[in-house]
Image 1 (cartoon, rainbow, N blue to C red):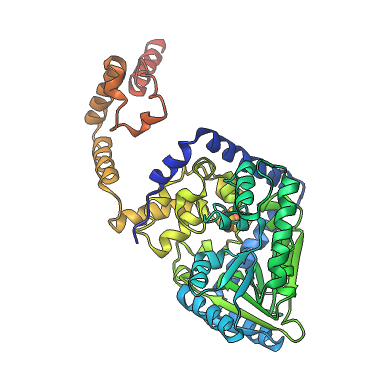
Image 2: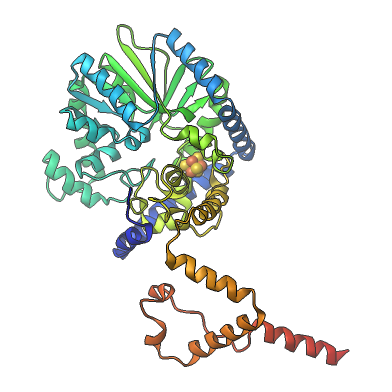
Length: 462
Ligand code: SF4
């Protein structure tokens, strides 16, 4: 699959300077909230270590825990389905909806259903799907995709929300008051909740020991969505499993603090079997996760609890926007997950990184994100998927750096050019560095010359 390269998409985002700055600041604000929450807990690092170990242990025995979960969920009255990929997942959802004759579905936030492109699939079958998370509903009305896994509409300003609501919900033109807009959305969604035939939710944690599910939201929309319809369909990636109910406290304490800087998500809803007289269907989806589990280099990324902290802190994500990644999950973790599905289509993503390591520092489950991104760069090179614009300069640089005389000679030419060539001869299309930055000032002496001066001075002093 050919997708647009990250630099091209990012260039479109940064072309709107005001939006790029505002996006950067909005996410940095969330990152700072997260920091305050993290330092307020003396046991923060122990929690991160515990979460990492629980997830690693679960992934190492995933097959056993999945079977245990299926048995216990079935005992509670749920029906467990297994989907190899997104097509199977979508077909299972469709067959369940067709069985009940459902035409209207309400859905709380689920990155898995985004990954499987469930909405367009169901809409093609004549089924109305309404996303009930406020941010997701806004992007759905605008026919966009979420740009962030926790804050799906972070790229949209309140003035634009007002325009969208005016068009779709007939709110007052130009009224940007967040309370007014939220109230309008609430009234609109209430009608959808009341009319829904089936409720679909994602899953934050599935507990092998009990067969129960936990769904975390800030708006209570998952609870409302599954309380009225008779059927609840819960869609989850197989990595959402945790072994014991007692493990949950570790993850719930980390998740909201890392995601939005709250002590806990407003609603952490537990589902143990269907409602009386209702049906609960749980779809366990692989969609490439088993392959990732088999990869020693990238297995760690299965520990991800989708908190979004790595996005909020990433200098590239904050300045290029989530849509520039062209994937359901953007940012550092998305740049690891996407190439594992299709490295050719997403070959630019591991390079959308400064290797600053900030993502690794904030990750609540201690995924070594920047190391995995570096690993992906090597992997992409080995697979022969790097463009010539990267391979040729790298080969030339490596050749130059292996030859001391050539290195000296190129350095001297570089210094001369920086000092004497006219600006137009340095800042042109072949110099991407100079597009938005000034070249460094040419130093008087090179490091080698400085070293020699220092050494001869030392010798004469002795
Ligand atoms: S990789 Fe870590 S920081 Fe990023 S979303 Fe996943 S859990 Fe959060």
